[in-house]
Length: 126
Image (cartoon, rainbow, N blue to C red; front, side):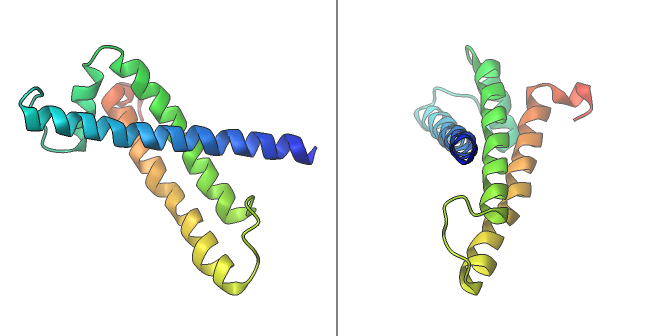
């Protein structure tokens, strides 16, 4: 049972890190387009997400990124609660590292909410 749990946790972590990497890639591509004069005018993250959705397969990719960022939020919460990487149980580890991991969860969920609103979740009550 322990191996199965570790496999699930590992899959959640990997999915989350892939999604996080895709967000960085998305921002980089949009920045490059704007720099080269190939993209539209973007003033904030919402405009960037909106512009990305208008690209071919943008909304499908955005939904995948949203799911991945939810996985990343779950991963950060698990790092804070159960310490799946076995970092230790000393005061410094628990208070500084695990507390930091756990407190990042709302940040990722806030980004997910913004992306979902941009994707069309605004009409669904997100």
